[in-house]
Every structure is written in C-alpha cells, then in structure tokens.
Image (cartoon, rainbow, N blue to C red):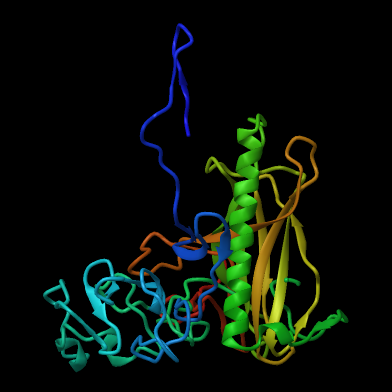
Length: 369
C-alpha cells in the first residue's frame, strides 16, 4: 500500500491498490522465467520453444494440464477456448491448422504446392519448424549449424577455448567432446542458462549505475564488424574464418579500454579443438580478432560463449557473460541482424559455419582484404 501525507498531518490511504499477480520474464525474445506472485521460477523450453511435452501437432502428453500459460512452441494457450494465440491468428492444437487464413494474400507459390493451403501450420512439418507470429514459417531448425537457409535452433537461443577453435597441431592440449553438450535437450538447457546469466549480469551492472555509480561502464555486447576467410598457402589446408569483434557499452559507444579483456569459452559436441584458452585485450578501437579453423584435426562442432573483464577500479567486473550482435546474420523477423548468447560453430575442410551462416559471398570464399 502507498500512504500519502498532506500538509496539516492528514494521511490518506488509497482505496485502490495494485500488486503483481503473475509475470513472465523474457530475454532475447525468449521466455526464461515465470513469477507466480511470490517466487520466480526459471522456465526452460525445448528445441521448439515448448514448455512441457507434446505430440507433433501440439497436443499435450500424456494428458492436458491447466491452460492460461505458454505451452506449445511458446504459444499462450487460452484458458477459455484451449486455442494457441499466435499473435496474428489462433492455432488449433492437434489439428495442424490455424482458424483463419494466412493474412498475406500472396503466401502461396508454385515452388511449394503446400503453401496454397493458407490454413496449414508450418507447411506440414511441425518437427522442424515453428510459426511464432502466425504469419510465416520461422527459418529455424535442428540442422541450423550446417544449413545456411536456417537462422538458428527453434528455441530462439544459441550454443568455453582457443582461437575460436584450431584443430589438432601446435602442441596444445586437445579439447575432446563434452558429455554435457551432446543431446538437443542438453544443448537447449545450456544455452538457456547462459542467456539467463547474461540477463542477470546486465541487471546487476545496471543496478550499479542506478546505485550511484553514474560513471560505471560495462560491456553490453560484442558486435561483429568483420567476417572473412584467410587465404591459405597450400590448397590442402583447412580454411580459416576470421571474425573481428568490437566491444560496445550500454550507451552504444565503443568500449576501448586497455584494461578490458574478452575471453572465449568453447564446448565441443563432437570432434576436437586445440585448446589455446584465448583471452584478448581489445585494441584502441575496442576490437579483437578471432580465427576459426579445424586445423589438421577432424571435422568439429563446438559451442562458443564470451565473457568480459575489466581490472580498473571504477569499472571493475570479472567474467561477465556478454552477448554477440551479428548484423550480417539476419532473418525476416530480424532484418537488421540478431543477438546471440551462444555461437554454434561447425568446422570442416572447406567451410566454417557460425549459427547457420558460412560467411561466403555467392557461394565463394570471401577473402580478407
């Protein structure tokens, strides 16, 4: 309750008071926690963004639970009707159909005969795709790391380390497959926990500013400012993809501080990486460069994350999780680029895929100038 005190000592208590009964917490467009009026519970979703277990077309298994919350692919399931709210129309669980036609009149095309059915859900493939807006099939899927047409996994998140991942050679110890990053469920959970850690770090750093440390700066994100391939001296060498990152603070300014260091952390799903344990000091422009190659090792899939540290007094922070903004990795939903907590990387002889993109131009290696 709020008590108002007026001149003369008169106090009045408002007749109407408000309190927060329930709330959902989101990060990067994905729900990560729920508030039930007294406690916050972290809410982990599966590969498709679903909360709970479902048959392919959205029916709960083994039996239905209480509606009025997020369920199949993150849709809010209406308590009164049992329908899934898909922003622009409603989805009927178990039927694979929307209750109204696709609002885009030209959604059908001869290249995909199934698209002429403007009521169908994700073109009849609910195992691989989602449609979070009710307007178009999301360009995501389980093969996002090797299929350039897919922007990422359908849970909306992304999946510690050296040189971005040089393969065997150099006499460095090898990082083998991590048993905690093998199954889709494991990877989805790890990615979501990291996203939650990023959100918690940002909240803690914002609290420092609001607590009187007005001059405090932190790393809000790392932006990809360069992405190309290094020319190899020998045709048999594995390709090397070169990524330049620039650190930005919470005000959108370049974070060029000689005390600022960025550390990468890599988890191997299969294959192996040469463990360099890379930590970079950003240069005068706030930049650092990451080189990614399988080297002489086997084809490898890894998950890469970044932390930031600053050893200076006022701006001190240590191993704060940070996100990556990639303006070149765009989708219909995010035409200006996307934010990622985790980078999923596949390294083979001729290509390095990062979150589903190969960094090539018209199918050809984009060599660094």
